[in-house]
Length: 231
Image (tube, rainbow, N blue to C red):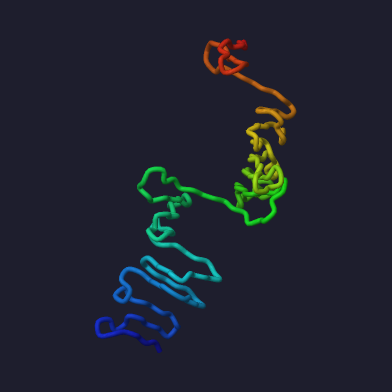
């Protein structure tokens, strides 16, 4: 058998059914489910149709489902100024709701490694099709962006490069590198020693895709204006 906990104004403010499910009515906590201190331990699950507030933290050993109407999400901060919202059939949208100047949304990826040395990866973003029905290469990492240390970090040094990986018939491999000094290496040149370096084969094709005209290359300092014309 079940039972209720309530008052004259709300006789079933808290109800417990025969299966052990607990329901807190909207009259007792208007429009929300709230825990301001401590913790709530539930072996089954919590279902709420409105906003839920957990002032003392929430821990679960199972999945958390945000269902119901689209565009719902997670709100962060004292004023709920930062939000992660669900976009129907698309993914997630991260928002900074501060309506002030210079208030971008900032995504910071951190590692808690205490001694960074050369070749340590600081952060990785990878892309793949995990359920490709053909399997094989179709389910491996097809592209990735990695931030990698180029040397030992200390109080005055944090050299790092960005590595861009793509795949043809493989797990994605390094195809372009932007070094800590601003050097750009492509076509297999993973350690550019100059501003722009190419690996092998070092083929450059420049075309003017109009009916007539030529493709121009200008080589020189900032004042150079005379192009070298390519037929």
